Image (cartoon, rainbow, N blue to C red; front, side, top):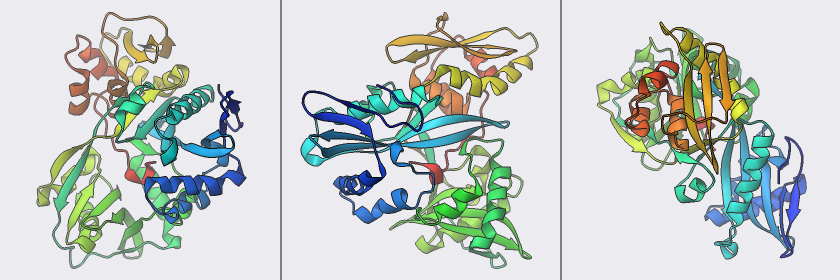
Amino acid sequence: MSTSAGESSAASDPGGLVIRTARADDIDRVLDLLTHYDQPRAAFEPWYEHDPAYRPEQSWLAETHGRLVAHLRIYPRRLRLGGGATMTVAGIGNVITAQEARRQGHADRLLRAAVSAAADAGYAYSLLWTHLPQLYSRHGYGEAPEEILHAVTGLPSADACVRPANDADLPVVAELENRFDVDRSGPAVRDLAFWRGSRNWLGDDVLVSDRSGRVTGYVRRRVERDHVNVVELGVATDDLHLGRVLLAAAAQPRQGRLRASLPPSLRRALDPWQSAVRDSPGLMGRPLSLPALASALSSNWSSRLRAVQHPRDVVVPITLPGRLASLRISTEGVRAMPELAAAPPLDPGALTALVLRGCDARTVLLLGDRADIDDLSAIAPAQDFVLWPTDAF
């Protein structure tokens, strides 16, 4: 069963089970069901009532005899791949089954329906964060761990002017984000509507640095019980001093204790505080539409191949649910192919890391000992990768 973008779809079986996309009048029931996470309804309401990007048809429902028993939400994203390239991503989130209806396969049914629809709609990739990898590995997802930095900062500089952002700052903040992230891999493409709307549904604070009345950088934080989560840092890579100022100011509500996801280009901002890097499991990904993925990768991967002294086609074999396929990279572009290569196929986790991170140290660990590692490094060198938690789902 599948549906194209924007359509509603429904399927039923003789047992009274219906799988369909939601309508506006379903949202109250969805919010009630989300409390089965053992969190109050108010924790979810902003994401459904104030997120301007949300549409009811992005929610997939499982009903038995008219009773809502499971839910899954698609979060559309367009992620940067560096060099101006982007990739469409169907994020998976808010997967929940009513407590009395668990262990009956409802989450699997919703995943099959939603993933099929997203592939038909032309999404190149799907990403999610989970503590249940075994559920999603059944549907072709592979693990691609991230890293979290932990530090205890010093006091902010006495002459630093860091203040809460106001609505008038947001156009400048949006412009800065676009400038700072344009060559990174992982950040979502956003517009001004996101920055204005997210203040109404994300529980974040945005602080800005103000130099003589001019906003030059920003930090986005979430103050937790015993630490501060830095969910985004916006500074130029050649102004790490400003990064330290913003990080120190952000962490003050919890005596400097912070956790942060940062791209390699900004990690040195934490050097004075001897940060610790720890693995953060949970990220999983898989390709959806190989033609769309090939198109997204084409400009970057083929241009890098053209820079090789004696370029030859590179074939990247990959594992898909129930079949094997390949991406063939030439100096002219990237094509999805049914053929196999001599090298072993990449599992979905290794492919996710290759596409987003390039061949950095983490990806090389996932790839293992491969004869084609030089070819893979040529088309996908290490990237300035970060998935800002601001954009998570």
